[in-house]
View 1 (cartoon, rainbow, N blue to C red):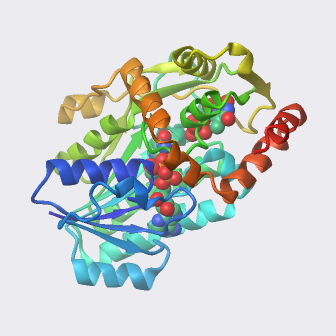
View 2: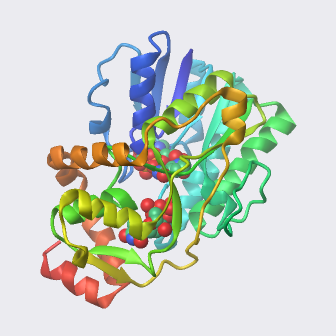
Amino acid sequence: MKLLVTGGAGFIGSAFVRLVIAERPDYSITNLDKLSYSGNLENLASIQHHPNYRFVHGDVCDAQLVNELFEQERPDAVVHFAAESHVDRSILSPEPVFETNLRGTFVLLEAARRHGVGRFIQVSTDEVYGSIEPPAEADESWPLNPSSPYSASKAGADLLALAYFRTYGVPAIVTRSSNNYGPFQFPEKLIPLMITNALEQRPLPVYGDGLQVRDWIYVDDHCRALLTVLERGRPGEIYNIAGNCSLTNLEVVRRILRSLGRPESLIQFVTDRPGHDRRYAMSSAKIQAELGWKPLVDFETGLATTIRWYQENTGWLERVRTGEYRQYYARNYEQRDAELGRLVRLRGR
Ligand code: NAD
Ligand code: TYD
């Protein structure tokens, strides 16, 4: 099977590429990635010279490049990860989010329609369902109710993929996963940000009251689900991929502090995210019943592995925390809370 993976230099895409190269010797991968701030070829260093792997530096919005790739490679399947993936950045600068997440998905679907492809996996998120009152859990027929520019763009891209299935017969499948964590995650998302700040004894900025609930899935469990859907999922269907591990943000942060032996006084409550969804919750009964997938890594084990990885990979961390990261950090957190901004500046980051 020839795969065209987009966004394979990012956090989840690179875990998927590593998994496929390790476990499917008869698959080959072309990875199309723009190398935006979160794309990092270091994430693929372990497989970069593998004969079944090829990297193409480019933008999914570049229709000419995408069409050339389809002509040259004739991929059997597309696994589409490339996205602007962060809610806070989508609030600060929505435009690139709509460009990549909507237009990029459109360009790929058009190429898939024109050239033909056996499967098109649209990698999406539980955030498209919006905030869900307890004790409900969204199944795949739950109404879409996105709150942020990020989740609205993902909802739009999901609908486009499903429309291309119904109208043109493009064999698209939408997957919706809950919050991922694990090694190689860019330190703008909750878990890596809190681990790295705690390691350096910097304040841990918790939005609002910290009682928002997220469902956590270890990245390798998500990638196994994607491989299962790619190989056995039904075109035109949606599959939820839940971690079955619902925790408040405050609980996650406390567990990180406990694991590292750091004091809770590092927690700093800061101004809430605008439009912040209170609770995400999904049922993944469908993928479990139809395809036999379930998550294997419990949160305690996954978190311990993740913390150890960040402790052992300080070079990776330093290299991704470039001037761009520092500018983003200042913009997102200093504006949010004057006190935290003062602390951030005092510590010289
Ligand atoms: P990430 O930000 O780590 O990686 C995104 C990758 O896409 C990067 O390598 C980046 O360079 C690339 N990219 C961005 N714009 C591009 C463009 N225009 N053309 C080509 N490449 C481009 O994100 P991630 O966390 O790995 O998320 C991957 C996918 O999974 C996204 O579609 C995201 O919506 C989805 N998802 C993420 C989570 C999560 O918890 N992180 C949960 C559910 C779904
Ligand atoms: P995040 O990792 O950005 O994922 P998402 O918004 O896609 O769920 O955030 C997870 C939760 O953590 C979310 O409720 C926002 C919260 N959060 C903080 O409280 N502080 C932070 O510094 C960050 C980045 C997130």
